[in-house]
Length: 567
Image 1 (cartoon, rainbow, N blue to C red):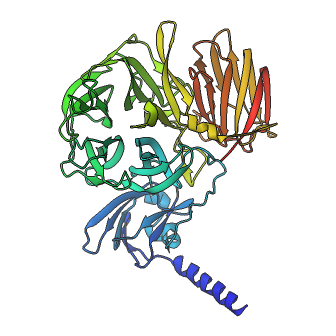
Image 2: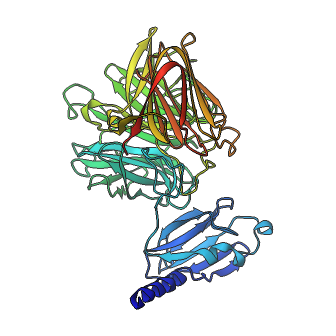
Image 3: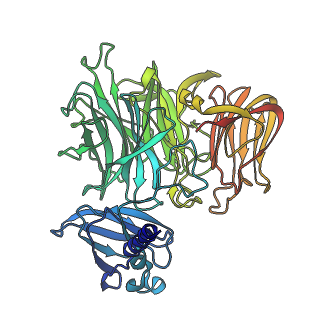
């Protein structure tokens, strides 16, 4: 008993020490410094989301800045904590940007009382809306998937990440890996901001033939450095994508435009005889209201080739996150846009045509807009480089810029949608992109059950038109309608649960089905519903936030089979 009491007492003393009040050096109405204590791994920073960002310069023992970040430091209450690795940090130079008349005096801010030193940071899930089988960050904000590739049996997913809060800021490449596209393991940060700017979206390739001179099979990432201007940089990895070294010659591409970003690199085969017979690297970049193509033989020196898009598709917002997909003789240009989606906010449009190594020629009429997914929550979709078996595997960000910063989670924000294999189909003389759940998703299907749960797959065989309603005991519901005559599918989430955080969230989304639907696959995961028709011609991704799981299903015009999810 004495030993137990001694252990408890020691733990209490450690807790008191860890939470001892920090004594800031207040230097002005909005300025303070803080000397860092050494001996622990992290300083846990208290965040209050309603506050303005405080700018923090992290200085080493020579008073040289080693890092800069923006954090919504707590003024009067703590929403959650984020970890700052102490490492070389000796001094924090902090500038607050809130209104002193409403926030009060800097010396009285809650952050000084609540900062903690710790050797650990608890990432145990505290969110009821965290998906069970979709990729999410352990904590913090996530948006666009970046730099995705497959190598040596591992799928690598990098993503736009804020390690210092659960709202957009401090753009860094986070990193996760998976052996099966379903179960993901968090990895250390991959590429962090530098003096060229934050690390925006981009892509990565495996340089099999050492064209860049960084080594055979080196992984090379190309990303946007977003500072005073947006420029393109590269970094290389000799350990399979775990750690990166930034190229000393960055930036490698510059252009006089405010929106010049999101490079997608791919190899263009000039002949069928392989990479050493006239092939070259191509990068497609989003530039305001168009895309630009550049070519290179070494990934360092780039030549402008052509532009596309001024008269094509939707131009209600900024073009972002392009991708080029080769389906034999046909090519598809993916182009994400924000705003401008069919139901407001962000979405993914695409163009079908041909590419000759210099320019893209679209076969669609200029006024036509083809959408990859007709839900509200499918954006920044790009594909994996080097996917096995010649597959084209895509992964979306599952949110919408209209409300992504406000969804009702705190520990983390945002998930990726299910991985999708892409293909082409011709309907009425038109070519359309198809999306079906990747074959790896099939491992999730468990035994049949009688009623829906918070994580399940529902297969609905339909005969003609059909109505499907998911609901719970609180009366919250999502209703789906398939109209066989009009060849449309709709999803109504206006009564789905918590819709109060944004006026743009409650909505009905409607999609063309491009023919008859015989079977629907619905994937339910705590805070999302993804609907696929069995042929992949119709896809709809929507977030939902019910106060309790949907456990009731009613189907008119079809028969449902419910499968539990094997996590």
